Structures are given as C-alpha cells and as structure tokens.
Image 1: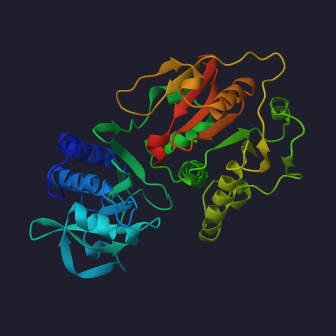
Image 2 (image 1 turned 45 degrees about the vertical axis):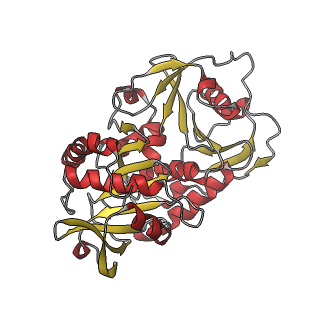
Image 3 (image 1 turned 180 degrees about the horizontal axis):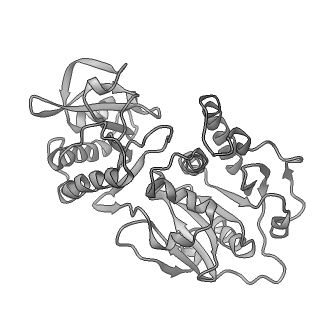
Length: 374
C-alpha cells in the first residue's frame, strides 16, 4: 500500500503545481523555497494519504511534511541517513511532528524523494502537506512573516478534492470585520489585526469543543436586546482587548506578537463554555455563556444565503438548520436581528461558519470557512 498511488493525487497533481505557482505570483511572494513538480506532488500526496489510514499505538497520525532541502532550514534535526518517502515511515514518525509548527523535511536525494529530518523553520512559499485526520490531507504553502496561518490551496478528503477560491465574488459585500478573514487569501497584506482574526477562528475550530463568538460594535449595548437576561458571565468593565496590543496601523512589534497566542487561547476557552461569547469589534470581551433570543417581534430566520470559498461551488439559499443545530440557528437569528454584528460558529465536527447580514441581498449570509482554517 505504501508504494501505490492514491488515484485522486494523480488527477490533481498538475493542477496543484500550477495553482501554487499562480498564487505566489499573484500575491507577489518571494521565491524562497523550491517548488515540487507534479510527479513529486503526486508521490507526496499518495504517501500522506495512505499514512493517514494507519494507526500507531492505536492513534491516527497527524503529520506535516515540508518540501525543502536541509540547507534551507537552519537548526533542523537531520537524520544520519535519509529514509525513502513512504506511508510506513511517515506513520512511524508522525508522533515526532505532532506538535504545531513541526514538519518532516522532504527532499530529492539521488533522484528519489526522501525524508531527511525534522524542522521548525521553513522558508516563504514552502510547499507543505498536512495530514489532519484519516483520509483528510491539506495542501498549503508558507506565507511571509509575520503571518502565522499558512495559505491553503486544496483539501483532499477521500476521493473528493476542493480547491480554495481565492476571492469568492459574493464576499465583496461582506462587512469589514468578516472581509478581513478573506483578505488573507486574496492579498499579501501583513496586517496583524487580520491575522489575529484568523488565529481565533482556526483556534476555535481546532479546539474541537464547538462554540460561538459574537462580534458587536463598540460603544453600544444594542446587542443585549438579543440576549436572554440576566447575563450571568458579564465582564464589567470590559477587559482590555487585543486592540490594545496593536499599533494604530495594525502592525505587530516583536514584543506584542508574543502576547497574541495567550489572548487567542483565552478567547477560545471562553467560547467552549455553553452559550456564546461576546466581544467588541476592538476585541474587548464583554460576556460569555450568553443565550441568544430573537428580538421582540423579529421573525424566525428560515433561509440564509450560503457561500463556500471553493472553486466550482456557487452560492445557494438554504434553511439554516442544514448548516447545523441550535448553535447555528441562534447565530443566524443574531445576525438577522443585529445587522451590524457578526457571529462565528465552530462545530465539534470541524465545520466553521460565519453569519452576517447582507444589505445587498436583504438576508443573512452564511460563509462556510472550514476549508480555509484546517
């Protein structure tokens, strides 16, 4: 099995090669890392896929592999002898690179793809494959510093392949707060405010507990009309938000960058509590564990416009119950009743949806984003 090709890999390898090169050119990224050709991409995807179906000591492997030479990764742990790339070796070494930021280094040695070591440091544009779950492999590449989130190119789940659409047309009407989540994939911007939003969304999804985050305008308490009273876990006065860590231009210094992850973890932990967490659009926590209720006289939301940033997937109008359970229905209702707010919902199964009011379509717009956040 370890030497056989995964059929979907052969079908998409050439397209992935072209996709990665085109994205890097469009975004103006420096060519710091070598780019694998279609044959190498097919071989890496096949090995990663078959490795994902194995078990080591009863655990499904989580693996990140990076295509680069040892010379491009200062301080890497280099093996005395390289190992031919194969599902068996990947599965055996998976535990060594399970912590975030760790990768198995893959390079060409004597005309054969081989595993040469373990690294934390990879250059901009480095091609990365991540095994997330059995049968689930994500193709991505390294963005320039200081952006922490890699840019996803494609998601392979079994025989299904989804290519990320860099700028879905319907996102042009998205509110600024939500638009920043998409700007990461449509520009080479280095705004750390945007990066923080991506960190929060990715952390909520990865936490695996499910949760809701409501983002409301600063200096107004109108959101309280959509919340069951009394609010049990209110924070008065509001804690200093992430906005206080940022300069006016939204850029991070080295000192403040170190403070980002603890702040992300704090917000993620609050969203895991039963109920929703409320923060301002300046990232100031206001309350958590709140229960959403329709405003007086508001009609129940029965339809939402659904967008998923996947190539070939058009917008559709669906019942919000199709997207999930009570948490999704409540978030859709909140976005309908509080039209200057945004509701982010993470499901325990990994789905991630953002709800916002569309003034153009005069209905709630739901954005499915898990393909961007894996």
